[in-house]
Length: 416
Image 1 (tube, rainbow, N blue to C red):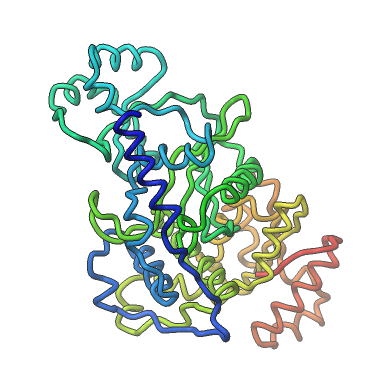
Image 2: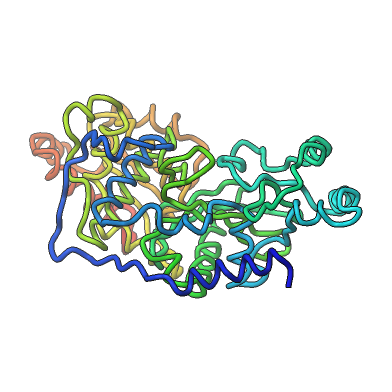
């Protein structure tokens, strides 16, 4: 048996003999205030989104070092472990150091790179978004500088190239797929996300609880031109011991456009499933970044019914969204609309707005066949609208929602 095989066998044995982390749902809802806790800010390698995630997981008493003791942030280690449990789930990969130390190893590596393989660093992040995952151009420098030493964790790997059509980032916690936080990373057909999510659901069934329980994971899933699904890599939340040492999570939770929406959505997930959520943000922290203002705004909008709608979408049932803007162009709601479209959230979108903004919005959101701007006054008679304008915001919003439902003649819609 090769030394690397022995080492992998020891890792698998440790995974399967370790205690399972049990994450219990609180008996009642426990909202908490997010504040600049020094313990959570210490060794924080991520951004504001990472701080939020760390705070939530801390409230559930999750050990952020546990799953990374097996060094699953290392992409070659990921390949070894995932391929052990689900053979063929990842593109074929080869240990760079192991092959280099064999007779004519350097030449064999060169030949593989000419025959459909590429060089990949085993540690790093944002390589997909930065298009920096293929390091083959540095091959000769890597070979000449490589230390001939034991490299159980591997610094470099060779991976077979895939002819990818689309790639998605999909998020899970425990054995749950978290609907509503899936992103298309490459390609154009976001509707394939449903099939990609179904693939991840099947993957979750085959992995041990010791890896999944208490672990928030961002899965990069690729779909080839012949419709075959592969795990490209996983992004493990927790305390990363080497590269950018400290607490890290999926970078999408800190995305400048949609990170606050995703964190609000995740907040809703933990509220519904574990009775833990951020209920407020301490004043000084709130004032330190607009992220928190946006996060609290989106948190106030999301309800459990929205998550259920996305589960129904996965089953083939999709509904339309009615978004109430009222007498203002709320840019946060416009951003939310764009996020919903990225998520392929609804089959159609109706924006209710004041007459004076209807034309402007129609121009701003032009060339979108799935979106219709509805001038609020068109929903009522002149006399009715005079009365409607005197109502408080929430009452006015709900009445406009029901009148829009009658106008569009759809059986089921949800309102934001």
